[in-house]
Length: 307
Length: 146
Image (tube, rainbow over all chains, first blue to last red; front, side, top):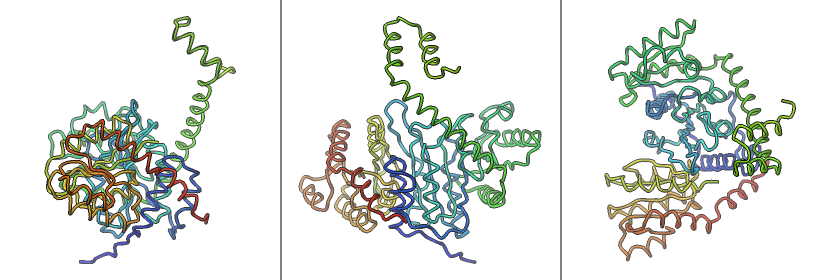
């Protein structure tokens, strides 16, 4: 048996990386400052970023856990950015994705970081992109980005990943679900996980038809991630997709620019909401002097006088 | 910025209902809680704490193994460069052992009778006193730009 040399990342560099991620996550100083706290890596090529997305409970973390093993066996260092949801009410979060990945805790070639989604609504954390750049700078070869459990429209992972895996499970709906817009459009690989459950073939067939009818060649794979079944085929599909995907790169750039523009507009609007003129509208709304619709219209006119 | 806490459940003890209740209570208090599941070794706990860059490690321990688990966690934290991460414990610890654990650097031991509110207040106070964010921000600024 050929044993590939397993590269590792030194523990103190991992600690510095962890702190640099905290700094950007909590917006202590700029990204450039955080990056400068890490030695520039000797990487010749950018890290390979794989996005893993899909509905809650589909097995994303377990798939990630298995993929870590495959990439490690191939001699690569692996970082995981795993995002779990923040409460919109308290801001708190339970970050539980590590539970499925703890067996890699002793391996210095693996770095796992959980991030709360905080105010972001697209399935990632607001500073996930920066965190990915930092793990890349620390020298990791592969970055697996696990989104929060998503529905149909949280597609932010598009802006960070070279290749996207959509993990689903049998019997989440009929064939019509596969032709709806959103999640199914961004997959580079479909995985029907828990393939030992009833309806797995039906789901895979529905997806395969959808793919063919869209003129795409997206692989549709079946896995039983808890036992490792089908993971080698998924790994091979990811290796095959590596380095391709020029269209994905263009899509990522486009998505990120639009997101940045939306973020700026949202911040500007938030600032506007604190102006005396806006507060006056809220005060009048509170005492029922204006209706909700009138208040919205008044604020709209205030913010966007050009219409 | 939310306080980040690792809720750790070491050893052979197969019950994590209490740890999960704590995790949810801390979440409801606005904290970001990393939960790693049952049967964690000190090595796993420390690796997770450092990679996650938590403010506090909360170790839930009911098995009586505290005098072996805590010294190991403290030693590994020091070796891994995470000695500024606060370690607290909760569960069943004989009163006579509490001073010994504090001597090792364990910041606080919460009795099994402590309410979740006492735990929340305790963590908030400890993080306030410890002043973590300022210390770490300074650490970052002290790095030479390359």
